[in-house]
Length: 79
Image 1 (cartoon, one colour):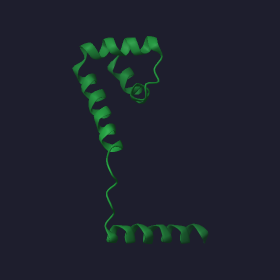
Image 2 (spheres, helix red, strand yellow):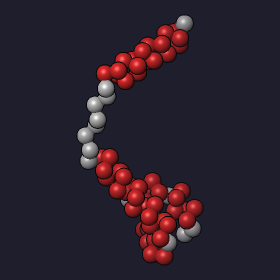
Image 3 (tube, helix red, strand yellow):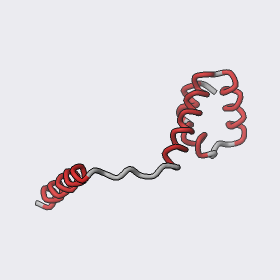
Image 4 (tube, one colour):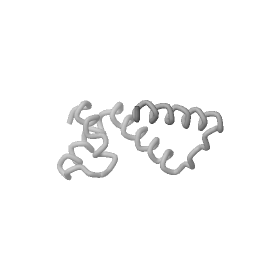
């Protein structure tokens, strides 16, 4: 497996959806490639942190701006 191949399969790697032979090839690559190990581990930790966190509340002003922008977009698209 090449570094580029690993990056292309990153989603499948993180979701545990790799074919067993490809997973074995990936494991061998990660044992020797510090850069790819860093990418996989950092991405995995980022996803774990995101999934285990509470959503941050939007400030009232930001919510008003979003509502205004959506209303304007809906108005333009219905015209």
